[in-house]
Length: 122
Image (cartoon, rainbow, N blue to C red; front, side):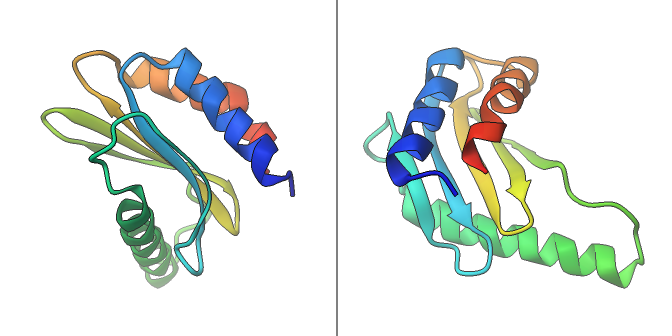
């Protein structure tokens, strides 16, 4: 596992590539605790968002198990009227949570930036 400094640097590279970056965190799936964070918008409660999104991912995994679906989660997308939220599983134990302003960015840019830098997070 990379150091916290290396994780933050990887998140900063995503921030540099995504116009409208609001916040991002690397999250421990089991506990919901943040391992690295970067916030560009001070009023965004990234700790709470990370913890709740951990629950969201765990519920989706339960649904997949119940339905006996093969494969694994690559990413999860939540589009709000003003924001795009992307959850990208980095490995089975951690995920990247990213929020961006929808007016300033688009899903293709967000996914491209995350894919380009995701390996540095595992």
